[in-house]
Length: 331
Image 1 (cartoon, one colour):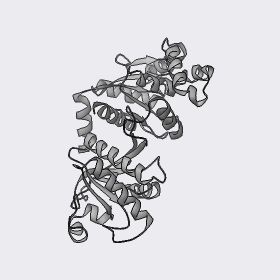
Image 2 (tube, one colour):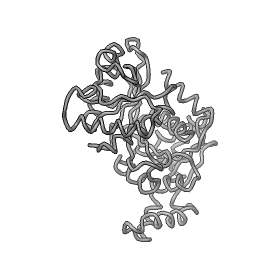
Image 3 (tube, one colour):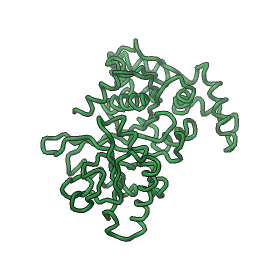
Image 4 (cartoon, helix red, strand yellow):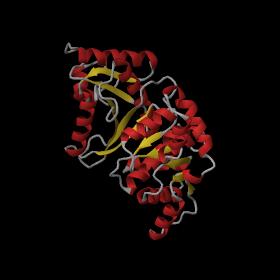
């Protein structure tokens, strides 16, 4: 796929160090070896060295370019425990709890990222999304100017019947169930930044609703309109429409009729859904009925790149998420 080729080449242009918390999972090992071999990333695997090396031998994989960290015997663990205790002491965490959690591969990986020893973190092959997000928030925190950590799906429309053939950002598809106007504005700004990183071109943002340009009156519409104005105040250079219906967002002829003053002119490549219900349903309709390829959810709004895998992920899923995390770290 053209967009994935673009992301791989962009990652190869400036590789970064990426830590993978589930380093003793064979899918993660294979993806890390491939990413290192292809010049995408310098990968650090967290886990038992004995287990990782045994699985690599069984799979005929070379670990020459792979760094392994075992929290149980690492000299970094005491320092990481001190860091975690300072971060969470005011939330009731004891030093003993911090010492225990610093031995957990997920906390260890994110503490390594916080310390600046790596530039991106990936987990989720075995950890739940709840665990992944909670640890990232506690250890890495939100980016300056953001209070909401959100996610997006990279939707790829490159089949012969897709017109136009393109990649799009759908957000917010996994974390924030019913965003306020302020949260929706943050999601839109973060998604525009994600589009600049992963899609070759400027973001054109559509704040989706069942109304276009005030054609309907409802509190749901008011929230979208309020969020749109917040985004315009913070990023006046950004092309954005809202409230706007999906057809007006993606079909130029419909946009010309429904909203002549449109900034996206029916060519939106970033779709911001009003809530998680709509976003989850929307991306799955595009995937299952429309034949789009859906990659994600990919996290955004964090101080440093930390991403979540599906527990059903394939080696290829891990490989591409490593590349995307590298591109995020480049930004």
